[in-house]
Length: 512
Image (cartoon, rainbow, N blue to C red; front, side, top):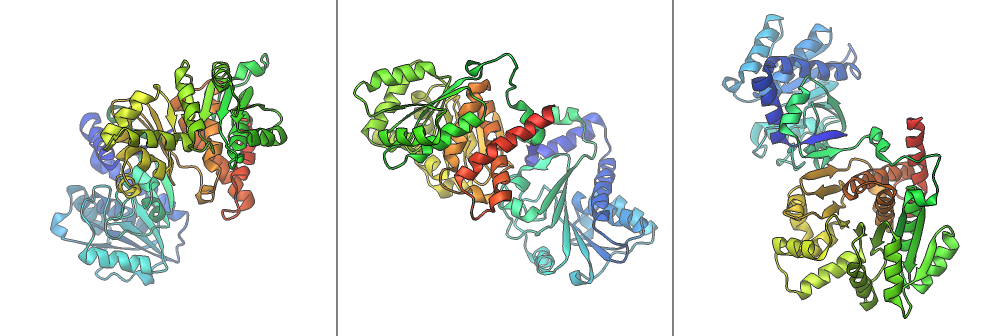
């Protein structure tokens, strides 16, 4: 697990390290410069030329130090300082003093095409205003050049918290960021400007991170060890039972995708409650599943028995929003609550019910949902479904993407899986942002696979929130495997489904 920090959190970590721990700011700057220089050495040649473009803040001080370190290693390096020299920070003044003592001079003209590598050290994580004037012209020239660009900490112009662009931003090929990854380098559009991101340890103490306790985190492959283990002395009853309430006459595939995904997560048994047409599909495509139709006269009994049998439940994929589907939801709520994943049409039914109650405003809608749904219910809306639930627009959510998890989880215990190019899982004070996956996964049925993954993990023993965040990560990894095999354009949800065993098998190999 790694943190994804906001700009303000990183500033607090930096300040705590300096003021409470006693690490000198210039020491951290020197370490930062060394890591960037090391990464540049991996791509530079002694025959080429490097230009470091510096601002007057500490990001610029990093840049001057980078130029000096590379100069001492025998590289051809120039550096230029943009802005009012009188506004140089004390650390930057010291770096400039050292560079001058070594015979280095400030370059007077910005001629980007004379260089092989440009280092962007103009603005760091503290940028608040839109970029204009001289800075804008320089960044435009950098972006228009055909030169390899390395950004220091964040590409200048990218908001380190939101990923939004401050009028213009450097389009980097490589970003070397310090301490932990920045949320704005993970979110779009900032991620598109960052190129390859390398996170370097420059000596921020663990105590500083513990003191600030950043809210967001993300997973790496080592986190697959969170998948519940299997044991030699066990049987199918040892690994949980998943009930999938999904599918309708014209949407028979969703139940299959969700059910098979749950099986791939290692749960022992899956029961699919679906339409008569869906039963035919499940009987043919997934003979391992138990199946039943909801098109029966004794539906209340069938539902009651199925819910009591299950350890985890999925409801909604391909279900439709007719009277029968509403009845299924109402019957679900009459029973003792079981861990449940609400997706697709189940979310739309909830939205319609809130509209019928004339519940208006985001706060009111969130409160109503927390009254209707049991604690720790998992909701998996994409942006349009979330907009319908909260009675707002998709544009509202996009504008304040990292604010909406705060709205959704305020004063309640529901779990939101907010699906987008960077999916966020939110529960009370916890925030997970997903870095796996790709745009090829934007295809029908992909979400059905995700619901099955989450439910399978819950049935196997994970808590609801743990299953939601790990499920999103596994889903994305399977999408990455599928993309390698099928390409982004041709990928289907079934390709993601069939890639799941490879992801799980990799974890099993790592555990040996």
